[in-house]
Image 1 (cartoon, rainbow, N blue to C red):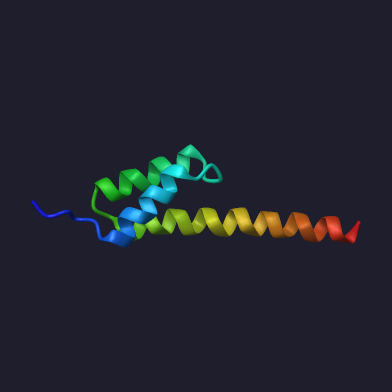
Image 2 (tube, rainbow, N blue to C red):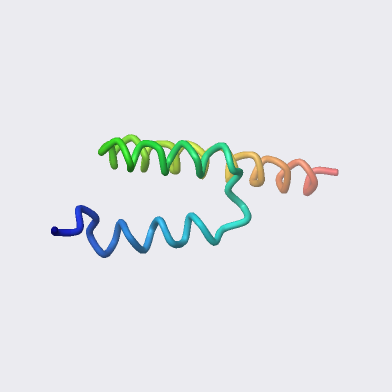
Length: 67
């Protein structure tokens, strides 16, 4: 049986598993969507988390610079 995941997708799932910056809710949603065969939606969850996390971090840094 052929592996349905490409090497890039396998690496992304490995990084997802090892990252402590991604909450369990996001990790579980990504794993669930991959298991159901929706890699696009899984990557969408990761992208949404990344935008929210880095946006909040950038806003915090900018707010601290103004103090």
